[in-house]
Image 1 (cartoon, rainbow, N blue to C red):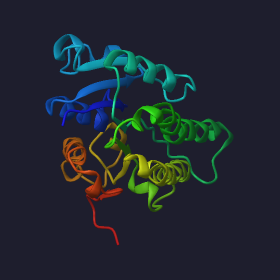
Image 2: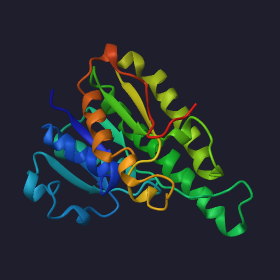
Image 3: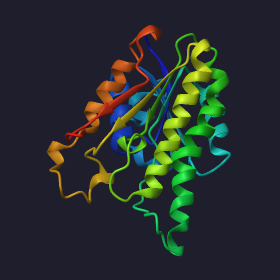
Length: 236
């Protein structure tokens, strides 16, 4: 089944790996990017992949109007879509006792990690309701399931995102919209560049999450898991 998929955060990391895998699988992609020029010359460049397969559009998760603009442009280009994959996200090491200079980090985490997916899902919802087997995949984090370390701001944003996933699942169930929250630990991306306690090769790899995402889109409505917890280290 060929799908038409909106993917945020596809310029690098997990989002980029998912987009490349989905293109290889034969799906049509609308990629929302802070800078669409970053994909020029890559396999995701419409000039290379073909505009009938890939569409690029500016998207900034903190811009309240960006979601509606991207969804409208995607509808005009592909005349519909049936799947949405949220990969855009940011990471700050904001502690409980943050200083005045870190207040903006909390605001940014909330806007990008929570309100970004919320506004984009809201904008896409009526289109997803048109399909009997629509899909929403959300890159959450193990930090949305438990708290480790002192990452107060990031953890709070991911717990809230997990709550949003659960609510979207409830609201979309009767219309055939299936939601999956992917919750990995450390993934070998730029976000984990400062991690010294774990070798990069021991981390979860972006291509492996892309493979899991590919499989999710092939499953029938009766067999779509709500949550995938992915650990590269042992947790009790």
